[in-house]
Image (cartoon, rainbow, N blue to C red; front, side, top):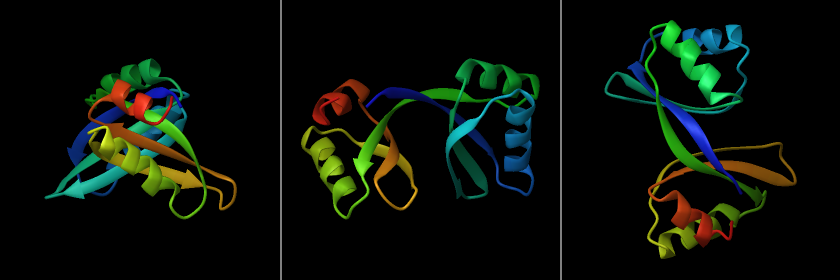
Length: 129
């Protein structure tokens, strides 16, 4: 269960914004491996897990798109009812706050989950990583 770096962008929520970000990264040869995008009060927050954070940051900066970095953890869980609940409970018992979560699964086997947490080392220890 590795520590990962996600890029965080706060942008206006309007048509074409995500297309622009994805296009900039595509032209730079950067693959988007995970994404969490949400909207609040007309603003969008995008968290991206990418194949090359440095290359992505440079490309976004050249396109005049600001982004920050945020440490997170990537967890592989069984794809079954209760797996996320068990991991979240371990983090709660360790007093680690989950600030964001996004996941993917192919329907069987395992699920890949990215968790933005308040304390990465504590979270890794709580989950046995």
